[in-house]
Amino acid sequence: MQAILLQEVDGLGAPGTVVNVARGYMRNYLLPRGLAEEATPARIAEVRRREEQRVAAEVRASEQARELASLLGRTILTLKAKAGHDGRLFGSITAADVSNAIFEARGVRVDRREISVDPPIRNVGTYTVPVNLGPGGVTEVKTIVSPLLDD
Image (tube, rainbow, N blue to C red; front, side, top):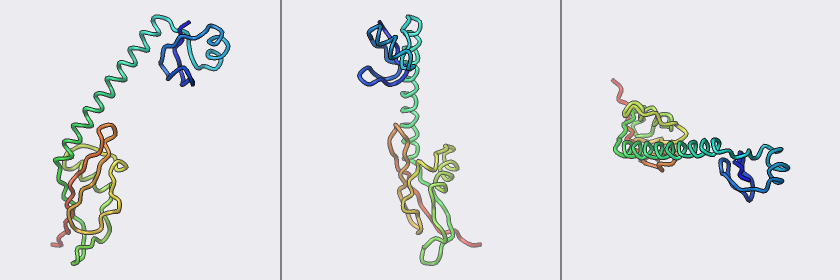
C-alpha cells in the first residue's frame, strides 16, 4: 500500500515522500504514531503541487540572493565617526552601523546578524565587510570609515 510520510522515518524517507509499505506496518506503526497517512490520488497530487511550489520558492530566493550579492558587490559605503587625531575611533563601527548604511545607500534591509564585523572596526580606513546572503553565498561590501569633521 502507498503512504505519504508526514515526518522523517529512518529507512523510508523524508516528509512528503510517497512510499510503498506493508498494510500491517502502516496500520500498526505509521498511523498510530502520526508518521504517515494513506495515499489517495488527490493527496498525492497535493503533495506534488506543494513540492513544486517549494522548489519554485527556492529558485526565486536563490535568484534574489544572487541579485542582492551583485548589488552589494558594487556598493561602497562611507561611514563617518568621531575619531582622534591618530585615526582611532571614539567607539567602533558595528554590524548594525553597516546594516543601516546599506539601507540608506541601497534601500535594502540586511539583518545585522548576517554581517560579520569581527573584530569591530576601531580605526579610520578602508575595509571589506562580509555579508552572508544564505543560499546566494557570501559577498563583500567595501566600507570606508572616515573621521567626522567638527564644524
